[in-house]
Every structure is written in structure tokens, then in C-alpha cells.
Image 1 (cartoon, one colour):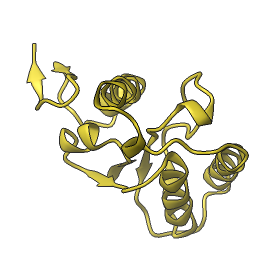
Image 2: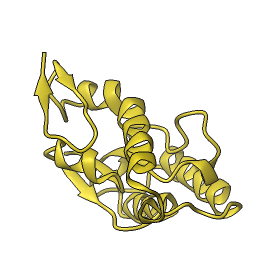
Image 3: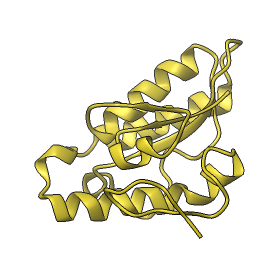
Length: 137
């Protein structure tokens, strides 16, 4: 089962199979790491995008929730990502003003758009609008 792990409330609302993490981007990565240790496999790179971790209050990762042996590639990816994020002071989404929060939420959603379509976690004609419900073309 494909699941989006995210701290982006807006993205979580429009993705039927998601797990919302109340916390920082690092908290999302730590949750993903725990799931990898339980046998889940990472489907999207945990460091996608070209923003520095201390400039990325939202983080979203798609996993395949499995119960099996630990996937070594997924474990390597998530450990590297956790290490990168631990070297920075995280920005908490709740510390941002509403306009800035919406901008960063939109960036996170845009980074995930094609992967969400690929794993059928959103409809093909989906148009993201921060703070609103799903719209279609």
C-alpha cells in the first residue's frame, strides 16, 4: 500500500492514503526511518528539491508500506537524509506567517505532484491550491 508521509496539512487533506506528522521536516524523516526499519520501502527521495533543509519547513515522502526485511537502499537513503537534516536548525511550519506557510506548502505539493500521480495518490487532473480542497481541470 502506497502512503504519503508528510507534515504538510494541505497535502495530507487531498491525499487519501497519507499519514500527517505534527512536527518538523526532521520529524517526518524520523517517522519514515521507523517505517523502513519495519520493512517499508521508500519510493520518493527524502531530499527531493533544491532547498536547504533549514529553508524547507515541509517534507513529504511516499513509501510502500510493507512488513518484510529491511530494504537496504531505503535505509541508506533515509539515514543520509536524517543526517543532513540533523545538521540544521529545523523550521517549524507553525512558526511561519500564513502567507509564507502557504508558499512553502505549495512548493512541497509541487515537488510531489508527479509522484503522487504515478502512485495514484491523487487524480490525474488535480490542481493544487494552498488552503483549499481539490480541484480538477
